[in-house]
Length: 355
Image 1 (cartoon, rainbow, N blue to C red):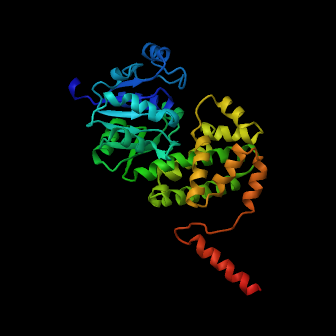
Image 2 (image 1 turned 90 degrees about the vertical axis):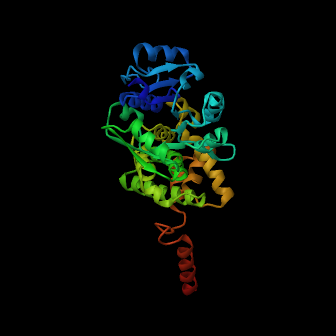
Image 3 (image 1 turned 60 degrees about the horizontal axis):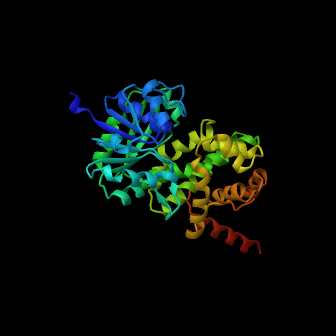
């Protein structure tokens, strides 16, 4: 029976990677988790707790931690890459000599690589050339998963085997895994929502109410889908877990790292102070800059991203930026029903009639 067990490797010692490793072990897989820090490796193997990121979470004791990449990857059929975006490519390159072309590689990282505006699955593809590549994204706060709160995620891949294998490895009575073939859209949704979680945190700190938060989330969804469709994604993807689902949780929960950064900024802290107080990576900070610059190059209308850019990097007060955004153009609600161009045309006709 031991030979029939699925062999899983998790690259990364953060909270989400730790939760996934434990779920896979709960489901009977042989799980090895790689991380750089030998001290954390020793702690996990001795106490079965990730004391740095999930100190109260009792991991499945079958998860074995390693600081040796070849040992962690030995025999793995399914590899989850749970590395922050700024180190993702380097870790994949380090792992490459011990990866095999028949392995399934799945990114769990919600971020964008600066060089070439690449998503993590694109880096996996470029660095390995493998066929079985996918991404996991959705409303997945690791702390709640660790508490076995009912949670759902999306495995996105154009490869049916990848989708099915991840569903088998992770699906359980508290963690549901739904499938999608829009890898690009699902991955963009997971990255873009981090921007708007920062905005939601700012709004909460400024004392803005439920009407404001509702407006912010729906306009964020419009902005996310507009951007993604221009880059080739399916707009329907954003009606699912990786779009509106992930947006709701990150714009509503103090467990969201990006929300907490935004809240600190709304309280008047500098960006450096907000990030230092967090003590973890908030992917949305870098994503704001990358998306804003990409939108400018591609001429994509992104007023929220533009406004956040000025708050984060040009020291514009959050309340002042909120007022400026409210004075912007009043365009269409759902652009895939009524285009912004049609609204502009109607306004021009109205102005001519007034003249």
